[in-house]
Length: 581
Image (tube, rainbow, N blue to C red):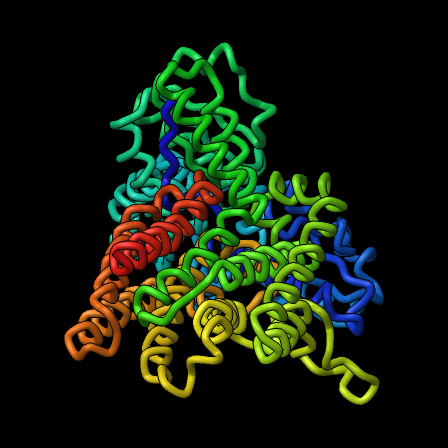
């Protein structure tokens, strides 16, 4: 079965912010006990994840007494906020900014004496919160006909919408509102993300035989996504997890579209996609799926990263024309394997939030992975020592640095309030330390003895490798953005957002291509430098055309990303062999 995943599927900005604030507060020992007033978002699986992290859900105001309270993303009425503030230890306001904007609009007009008409669901948490700002002059409508029951003599009337409302419904209500209240004020407060998701559903329905919408059954925006798909005349299935799917029902379709509500995490979407792809596949699809799973295992085991780092030393040798043996290749491969394996295990909270299947694979084989990681670190150290005492000492330093990446090393009784307790907490640390380590272990360590005579060539190679691995790491950060955001891992994608990070990656690739071509022209290295520009171009194509597949094929894409470095390294081996003839 072919599955097409909507690019807009998954968490919206408001949900992401609410979760980030809640998890950040949960990590603070000073803000305990902690609860949310009502469900933070409408997704049972995410709420279960929060409970595992010590964040309870309070159903009543009294349950919030003497606790830190997170105001849910949907917002609450102002009177309720005042009561909670009086009885709680403190409030953390996670109200979505777009919902807060609607609250501000209603408050502004209510103070001028306006009646407020809200297009939405009267029992929805957001609408209940909005009604609290109407100063008793608010009414909720759910259809254009509901307007007919309202008085005709209201002099001042405001029309707004629940942020996750159906765009077509709001326009129909607006048309009748303008006829009934010609002097009325209309504010289309439907969230831009909601509008974009619904439009993408309409476009996607033209190319699929059925739609699967993933998200909570009580989530208003998810319900409306399903309604939008049904209005397009496409069979639509609204499910919370893959367990809700009927395999016999869905096996009738060859092409299925998948989208998800604003409260649905990537891992739930990925589970549904994998389940759908396993239904009644054609022989060719089976063959492709087998190879895809094999490539995913290369990512799961970190074998792809290890091979890529090892072969990259050959590319450096071809670029600098400095000799290289088998020890530096082994050294780099074992170092990359050890650091990626041990740090993924130590910092597995983000992995759990990005890809629970991969996290479960790690936990199932944790003894083997721990042993293999330690053995690889020892092998990297031995191979470096055999290469030379200086190389061995350098390896000890970078192994120590890499091993401490996710370990608290700055915490003490004098700085208990410090926000940076680990290397990984430094803004942008993950994105820049990985390429720095890779460039060190593939450029400097194998050629410490060549520094006096080949410093210029090595520095040039260091710049190219650093830029190449920087683009590779930032690209991988885009795949892991959801988990990184939720656990507070400071990558550039988390700091700047995907759009700015995309521009950053494009700039890095342009710099890499320019440096490789100009360096070749100025003879800073061998003509092999041209292939670094080719690698930059391949990464650019990958980044451009992978956006819609990052939820669906994250592990598969990770291996493809590493394969660019592998290919460059294999070309380096071939180049060295041809030059030796």
